[in-house]
Image 1 (cartoon, rainbow, N blue to C red):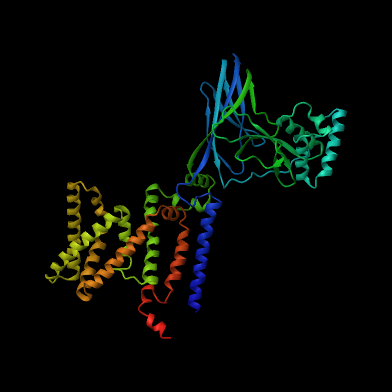
Image 2 (image 1 turned 90 degrees about the horizontal axis):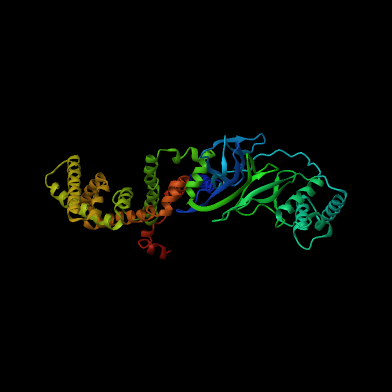
Length: 510
């Protein structure tokens, strides 16, 4: 009983470890559980336009920074005729700078990047902000602002509800008298956000403007959307002034934070920047792998993905072998099916993957049948075992060569895949079957040969399944789960499925 308990404990630990690592790769690193999954990759292009007056030109554009849940890749700057420099600001932000000694007429500059979801990206560390400076209001606006803040404070319970009620008071009609006075005739989202920031500063709540893009496919000449960020004591919380709800809109990329200018142009006039957005799709596995490599994820950095491509392709097949061993364990231990050799069906199944099932069965039966016929003739020569096996190997190679040449001449190119069959295994199979024929008769040969082909077929159907191939290669941690299942099957000592009919009278007589 103690030995069985040890098996159960080891199997449980192995299964838990394998499942934990696989689920971590899926939920934390973003590896897909199903093949052919794709994720949206957004291409964002900013277009800077201005008129130059013939003097030297200096153009500075704010660039997006790293942000939670978004990976920025493939940045490209069009700098034809311009010098270009990427500048890191003291506050950690980035700016692109184009320069030219002399330019005349209309000028157009482009900055392009790609963004996609990134599970590994976390929110950057922030330090608590300093208390805000109160805005300068005239007496009438100051009175209205104080009255409005008192109204909002009475309707709120904490900092979050205070901000929500303040935005609703400025954005949702009908407005109160104080809100309408502060907004004036401009009810645009930009002005609402600016007024809300002034009121939050007056209330002593740290805040800042956030400008970004809502990613929508096929959009051209887009402008940045204004949101606000409020410090809740632990972190910055985004609010949408258009809806008065916390959180950024879906598929939102933050372009800049704070009062930093978006575009500065020296030596030009009538400048503007617009954005175009295009959506495409990439395999989810490639995106997750690229993100994991960039972030030096240990589970990926020390894995099959770190091997050269040639070795990775080899492991795609090698990692399917444990699936075959699991199938063999189920058929032999639980079902009780007899095979010619313990793991010969796995090698035959690997050959079936290259030949396809029907052609593989036909070629296997042809080679083994012809080999058995020749083996019976070799038996009359009274050769030793090593001599017989060597002769059979030679005969098998000759048969495979002859079949390949004949199929090529007949235009049956699929039969050329006979070379994928393991020659030594076929030779041993022929030898074992011939001895079995002599000792047990043709019936036992048919049982074991048919059992081998049945197990090989079942293993092939699993090993050739696209989902199984995807999971075994991208989640090799599941090998631990397979090992746990094999350990549990390996300690089973009860009746096998094929024995139930044989021992049924014993059960009925109890």
